[in-house]
Length: 69
Image (cartoon, rainbow, N blue to C red; front, side, top):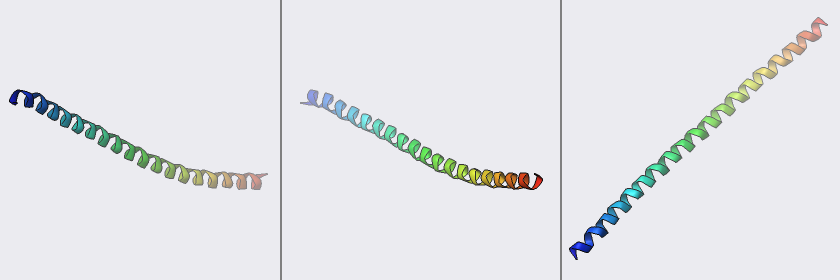
């Protein structure tokens, strides 16, 4: 029986190693996804702020052009 347990135990250890590796990969993918979602929200917010500033500048330019003409 001892001869049969060694390959079984090796398979069990290999299975645990595989599961730990898969867990590490899964965790890393989740961290990357969280970062990308956070980056997306940050970029959208900054672009919205920039858009508001550009719109205000366009209005000022139109006003100044109207006064000069």
